[in-house]
Image 1 (cartoon, one colour):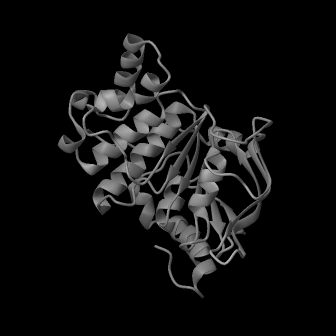
Image 2: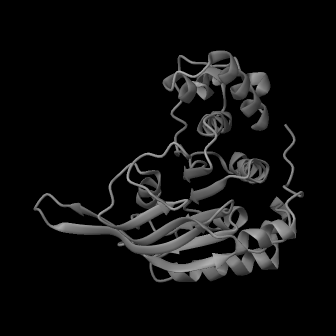
Length: 276
């Protein structure tokens, strides 16, 4: 498959993102845990942030700062300790039908083919099989795997498996895609190609994407904004607007503008070491 940059994303589109109303509103969000001796340990927050509709927000921070915790709170997978999350004006208290989640591991069922794995959400919800299969095949086409629809996970590369997982997360047509280091286990070349691919999918699908990563260059390349979290308890150190033009290509990684963004973000971690 030929990987192409998202050249069709216009400057006007990026301007629209910057001026759009909050889609997800986070207000005073905190998460604490109880230690074995009964003490309360704050892992995250307080966080107050507006996430814009159709934006690509990336999140970076040192290990243990609460990046994945924040994503799970947004997905409604764990209860918050304080604060509020609203999506389209509605409070988030549990798992949301309108949210798709992709984890670092694809978590595909080995006894199901690629198309059957994509169809899993439809099977759980007992939707029409024929219609669901047609949509699953369309999604596999979107991620470049239509010809591999009958293959089992052990017949697919790591990058292919992650594409299947992304297609599965889109199966129920969520407005928001939450991604927790989905490319962390891939080799460098596959990871670069997947970065270009996920930008293309974002541009084509019109989804709101929140993407956690340990890599500063990946965060800059993918994001329309980068949320930088501090050491635990994770709080907002800075939110960086990224303007790298209408399209993103891998050649931009060596540009002066790209370097300026990565240095700006990396300065937050000079005292504690690199986070990549």
